[in-house]
Length: 156
Length: 156
Length: 84
Length: 84
Image (cartoon, rainbow over all chains, first blue to last red; front, side):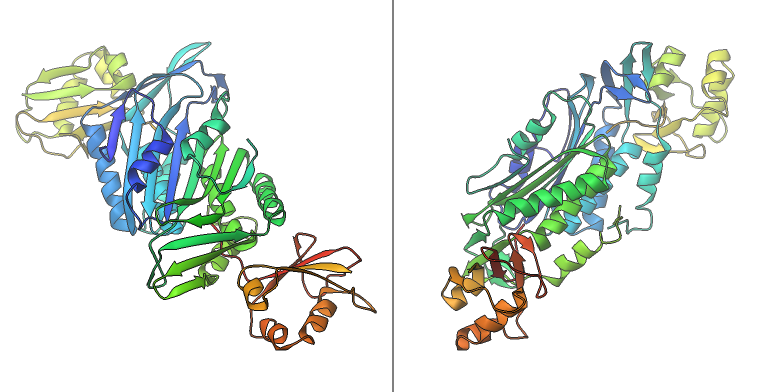
């Protein structure tokens, strides 16, 4: 399976981890993040969420983020799966999994990829609320999270 | 399924994540760590690893670490599964999964639980190498990782 | 000509997802394209008003007002991203 | 009496995983148990020599030399942990 995938279908985190580790004996640590649709956001109930993206650029941007993670940390493999289209609360949106020899680097690279994905990959969320549909606004806290890594180091 | 489990059987990370999130609509983030047996350690080939533990105290120690994570971060649920008995290189040893509304807290709590588990839960690893069997020595780097959280804050 | 794409809220506000426009004369840049778009009608001037946050990519790489353009380039305008 | 448990390398070195020993007279503490164990024979003195790293738990909670003991307590000695 490709390192980066954008798809409408659900994914299985266990399978993604297995695909990275099966047959390998040098992986000591896999850090994984799964993001899900919540039923409330900014004080409003969320009934459904629809994800739009910029096909082509999305894959390039995600590949570039994975390459950047490999250049910053001594990690062995990465998987990024991001869903698009309509999603219900409780459904998974995104998976980032990082395999490495040791846990510190796997955790740091996984968090880095999520922070960069949130600010650099061309996805947009539209929420359906009781008051109608609305595009989700970008968050300053996401910019701040991504800015932590600017010095080439980051919190870990 | 119980929040903390010590078992000989393998586990499925995808199922553990699903067990925490199925039926919920308030979880926005799940951070997961899986630790695996590597085929080398401290310069020697590892053919097999055997995990011993202090039944009873292990579960208490893991429950206390989970409680501590809940008291430090605004998280929604935690799962810790740790295997014991003989394991081959490539097999998973431990899973820690943390569900929260937001990713920063889920990542921090997951890393905290792993760091504390490594220094406070009564498990011991014995490696089988070409030169014979040996008990794994505790690492200073694990003590340092756990000490990061002493001020109640930590790196995130 | 260059291809111009619009995404998400910007696409909806403009009622347009994709169009071909002439490459601006002189030194063609993203800024020159934007100046030309703003002269069209109120919707375009409003969508790209100074207080609005938007991003631009050229040939699927993040770009800015000074990024030079050549015939056949793909220029995409969109709001700050909100994936993940 | 108290129950004493040994784990991992310590269990192997002592050739013993579990035993019952008398509660020390006077003020019974983990330290008093350890003093008594060290008087037994070379293996015990060696296993608990000052340069060796070990940990102790009383009734399945981490403890130290000053931890008081009462009849029926479970005292466990083991090397620094290496799970995860």
